[in-house]
Length: 548
Image (cartoon, rainbow, N blue to C red; front, side):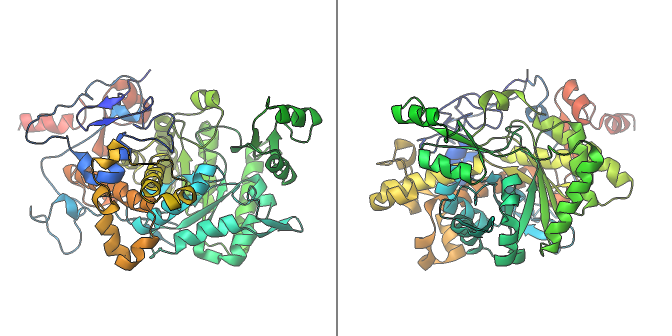
């Protein structure tokens, strides 16, 4: 049992979780109507101020994260160094005036033939058919586009869209998918990308063909094997019998079956109030690894025949065989990105006890991913670029995951954490503009004290308001949702915190981060991850100094 780093309240930062905090620092149940005030919620308003203890000038602060029990990302610690500077940008020197944390470059890129750039090493999790994703999409997409990071449209978006139209068994009109793609591309300036994910139903419905014809290589297409929150297909919940019947006709598994007379009777009496829509398992008609590989290669070949030049794969927290398959197949197929989501990752809907008890925890999955990638690299193969996902929310999480997977890991995927600014911004905008509240899916009638303490206008509330204005221009600010401003503000805090950690490790560009920048706080974590124990790190060179 690993000791949790995060307690419910953090007196140093002045933050409090509404619910029980997970290892990520987020509540296990994150609500769109929450009035605060966890660290991510507050960071979405005040930004990099949340990097430091509160009440400067009348306080001192001391760390309480000094005891580490069990194997977790919490039991990895970051090395700092007293000399040196690596990865200084061209035009700068190793002079102390140049070696300052604002000069740390956070730009990254991924891809095989075509390189996709990102301003910071972040991407969103897959935001699919859950209604939370649809309601707050503009905040997520426009925020990510302005920041310059990839955003992922998750599975089933087309299939659950009641306004979409089929022709000959294939999708012919997909207004919700179009809305999501277009809102991201509207502010895209060459950094980031829109990634569209497909599962079994999406493939049958012809989503790839639709995207190829309408958007071409403006999108990256993503095959999905799984995610960290569950080992079955994706789910949503609907409260309309008509909608449930529509989804069943679309080819989904709907539970309970809305076509049964007894189910309809129970629904009318109120004994049943909702229906769960499920996606199918992939690969059920395959029995051997070589069959899976052949099927996978055919899928990639078909997508390329449609014209897609960038293809990615998302996999979940299956066991070691599936992890090896994902890395090997993605490498052999020359894919552009492989995202590996460990258990501890979140979702919009999942069977709760399944989420609690299935799969490989993120740190074990990611440590093994590095080991397996290293085997391929030692054989001379160019290993697929990787993204790690599964319970990340803070800047030290980003550093640790990048270092654990170095040099293969190019991005860190955050799901629930970077949805919080979308919720918060919509709530603030709806409270200040009651006529727009319903359209925005705002949940507040007025600003709670957790927000009003900072002001009553967006210019006062969001530390990065004027940064966004400088990016888009004053006239265009009326088109930017407050959730996107909050997204930028949170991203700025994460970026600044990451720059500071990297400067302390004397790494001024992301490609300089290595596993040597970590040490393990206990022997168990060292054994499981291959990261040296804190007492052993550089011990030999230390003794050479003493004996010199």
